[in-house]
Image (cartoon, rainbow, N blue to C red; front, top):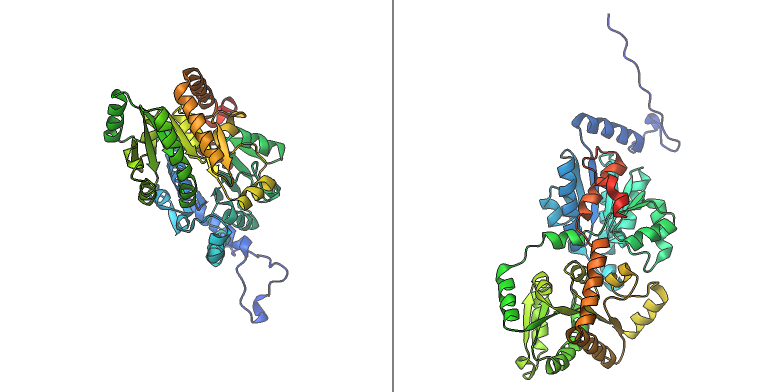
Length: 442
């Protein structure tokens, strides 16, 4: 005799109409997640949703996906990102890196699209098919993703978090409310989050992994080595990665090059342009007289230029981390308009514009913000670079400080530590012992 089947009763939430009301029932989130969890158990494995909006974040996230997959091949990845994440095995629901914007004027025309993508992510969260969310940089958009994930009880992690310690510290309330754990990439960041009651673990900056894995073009390296063998000293000129940075800062750098070339006839200046358009723009700034200067322009060869150079002059940016990784000192400038400078003085809470100096807690790279009259910055760049070329004791002291800082905070392995910490926090069967060694790293 068959046993009577046990009847399962699922209670309705208040405010949801009963079946005989004549209205269709909206999906029940708890039931959705229950059924999805059961299906997930049957299939095995977990799903991590990533939200990445910057091309650089796509690169770092792609490496992290590969690192996690090596430890736990059954984990699935989906979300917003770019080609590197797709190549690493992530299902890309939308290529958010093509929407990367800077500044309010660029954001406004795309607001509707950003909200549409946030709604798209919420539909995925509501389905119960996601076990955890990892945000990478891109805070303006990712705050919305975090809030919507927490709405469905999904744990949220932040990798390469916004630099709240530098400006906009009041946003820490959002971090405490919507993010379960932060993977801090800087020691100063870890300390700041500790002081503000945010759960976090220091893992190290992924940029150093990227530098360690970056193959150098042998043809370019041979060409530059030949220059050094001929008795030339090489100075890297790094004019920035964005159009407005190049346009504002390179003219000041060029004037400094003119003065330095007169004092140091054995020096050759290597301009490292990120894009063809940047290289062409820089070349067009050269006068007929400038074309006699010992200048070479390279496109897409920043790593080779830095590695081969004695020292550098740079526009403030993340490239300072590569200079640190390769042990090359540099002079730093950043030219801004008066309005932005006044705004920054009110909002920015750090004393340096250079990440390496912030990491060290002191000035290793001489730096200057240029506002209004460009002459003081031109002279500063000329004098500080000249000091690195003239004074061997000063130069070696800078190199020694960089080596010490690199040993403390600039080593590769941040991606592996991030993978282990994330898996450990989620309880997803961590392999390896990097997570247990975090106290040694910190």
